[in-house]
Length: 553
Image (cartoon, rainbow, N blue to C red; front, side, top):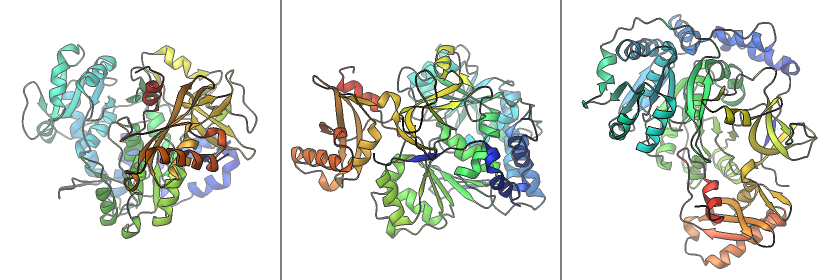
């Protein structure tokens, strides 16, 4: 079988003692008291704290360290508009400004601990201020992308029972068109240079507020964020994350995937409505006092990304697979990145040939994010032996891992469906080999069963992507009277092959896949398309292509 990617199993941390002593003794990391506390928890020397608040227990600690002159002269936050505007904040300035915003939310808007607020803003500094302010006030923040329609906003306001919404001039009209149907919505805040009837001006309010605010005491299991799932099947679900799952968890994972220090600058290109931004552009970098770099990026364009990496001292880049697929279409050897040393990809699997092309031209590996401690189980939650295909699952009992979301809010049926025996079931299929490495096959509902064979789409897509004619590929099941279903490939051609004979090229791609992977996996049907249907986070909507094939559109 073709190697897709493998995931090292992090067994009991007692087997990792030398490694943990090394990290624990790192002089830069010792600066953060909360990091030391977390290591004590992992070693069993200390209980998980009952109370934890990221603003007071992490950000304010870094502010103290900064004032004491024990942190490198590196900003905590660095934003550019792409048009010459720039904002830089230290941890002290971030604390000062976020306290002012916390007072706006509590004193002006009347929000209390546990209340929910929807924030729909592009990549502008106010988004980060509101995030930290909500932590300080114990308010639950629900992020949303600026691409949401009025229907999307209505659904989110009604489902979440949010009492407040913050947005900008672009989205405000959509909010106004549905606000009368949202009985819980009490306050509308707009980030704007002008005014709008029925809205409070966020910028004016927070500038005139006092910075005298005491951070509320939050339990580690208290909700900090709610994310709406992408809703590839049915309506989006509300997934709840606690101060522990987002704020306390990265004190371990930070060292394994982002590998940051207080001297580093990290740039995550993900949209503000996605959890990847909260992880890689809020919680995780600030745990280790790193600088979060933000480009407003009204549009994701290769030239903008590459030129920014050349002009600014960015150490770590985080992007979705679509970003890297787009970047490798360029001659990367003509760009000299200033500081880049670490690249991350998350959200869905990245094709090996994209990784190889990126490394051959930049010398850098792309590290994939798959943030769970996994095992493989069958439908009855029995752990399977090495080599046998099953569902990737996370042991959630007797103690639920900090990194897991708490529940699907107001949806006990969906929450129950995600649990099987002592495990949280991820919905991914895979195998574990004899060495304890996991091999990802695909989403459970994306698996194709043809003539009794179970075929993962990612392996076929990766084989197709190795052919120079293919810019993008998506593989789904298609009905077949003999085999029940067969593999069908949707292909976006690269520019140099756009005028090629399609029938001949389809045959060429089929033969290519037969030679690259097991012959039974080749796509018996090939359709060329101009573009792929994608979610707002850049993931290909395979379910939409599959539904089209099966006449369910």
